[in-house]
Length: 614
Ligand SMILES: *[C@@H]1O[C@H](CO)[C@@H](O)[C@H](O)[C@H]1NC(C)=O
Ligand SMILES: *[C@@H]1O[C@H](CO)[C@@H](O)[C@H](O)[C@H]1NC(C)=O
Ligand SMILES: *[C@@H]1O[C@H](CO)[C@@H](O)[C@H](O)[C@H]1NC(C)=O
Image (tube, rainbow, N blue to C red; front, side, top):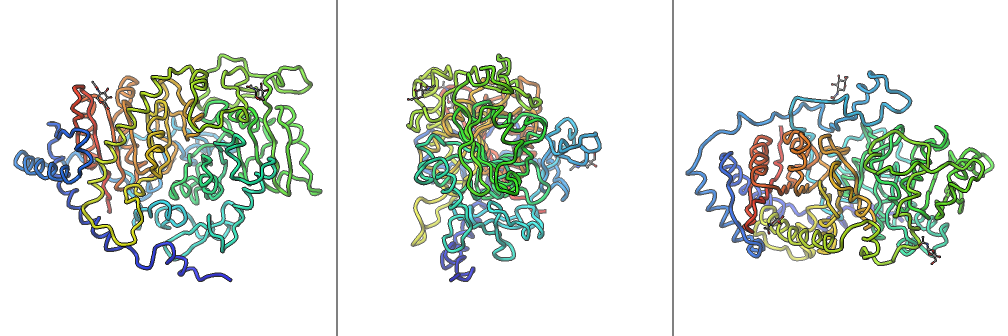
């Protein structure tokens, strides 16, 4: 028997929507916003109010501080900064993703799917404007409720896409007029994702899918993830699943996944390599993901092989693979043999292969086996480079079968040695991130939450544990911030970005089971607008300036990525922080400079993006 849906809604939200609470929050944020906005009049004098770390935790003190700052400031200046404000873009850019202008790509002659590729050179756009939210945009529901229910008005999806969302991972439902609901953990409405996950585990010879971790499967690249339900299930098993799909104008799998608080990034490999190092993932998954794996002489399979770890799994689900008799189509069978994959199992429309653990397999002179790439290829050099028809990573020190990895979730000294990273350096990164997190979090807390009373029945932990879900660390180093978040038990995930031009620490980040990607910050990031709640950048401005890129473009890009009322924490040298503060006020962020008072010229810039309604 099915329960009526509105009853289910009640179960999710509790008997009464928390409007009182929201109103209270809103009023206090508004009040603070007014305070902070006034402080943004002084563009050049840095308004550094100093807080020592143990005082951070007391937000009453911070509020008093804010008030007294405000009183000082209002007597200081009455300047008008509005003339410098960056204008708001037109409505047509509400879901704007730079570098993915398909019509411009077609005009430039790209075809056969290459028009869907990333072509930043064609969408150079010099006019500065701020991407506005859609008219009926609403702050996403907090995690974990927001994983299963999102606001219809926040994403771009057509009525047709609701109706055609029949495939297993794409099943979704319009609950009410303005909400979309996904049935990830709902026992009442059978959606098949759990059964499917269980089936895959069984095919790998496991008792159940909770054993994925023990079997060495910690990270999964889910290509064409539907709307992320399989990934959501894997995350609940502590497996890091990253959704990757091509840019889509409407009904984007990446946009919907991120809106649900699930890791996702725009990407395809029609002609160029993915921005991941070789030997990155324990499993590559494709359920009706639309890639014709047997085309282009198997180049797509070779790219999947490149990013798979030795002993890793390739899982394909979809009818296009099997012949009418239900056996595997011949071309796929031949291609997988050429790249030394072992066919493990088939059940109905699901096929699983395993990548070899033996690097000699490729060079054993077997007939038809594809040869290894000539090594000396750093992964950095493969950043968006053309697909190659050779096998990558065979000479790497990181060629370790996933089954051989230590079962500890922490990185071991032996693993650090493989990455040629000093232990003390690694742990220092973690320690400073830990301290920083303590400071950021308590800095943000008083600004998001005023002294509202805890309502009876409210769940611990109190927000902002749940107000921030999607975090981007723009200069992730060894992934220390991600590790610190995990250690502190925050229910967030972090997109760890390793900027081009810095040391390539991405393999180490991925080997910790984190999400990560290489990126050139002189270019826009492959994501939809309003997809991150917190963006953090330590030392990135210095790198960017040394590369000769525009700070204003970078901050505008951060603004595009951030959801309204999202947070930015920049940490850099005094001069750069002051410069970025000037720009921050032009793009209407509420910005504060914080002096860490530890004798260095490092400063923090803590900003909040306003909710602009026009
Ligand atoms: C995409 O490119 C076309 C053709 O060059 C151009 O007219 C259009 O304005 C571009 N769209 C965006 C959103 O930049
Ligand atoms: C993996 O483990 C097996 C069994 O313990 C061992 O024989 C093999 O040498 C290991 N391989 C690597 C590359 O460490
Ligand atoms: C001061 O703090 C910043 C940020 O945590 C850190 O990067 C810097 O090394 C510290 N400086 C000193 C002299 O301790």
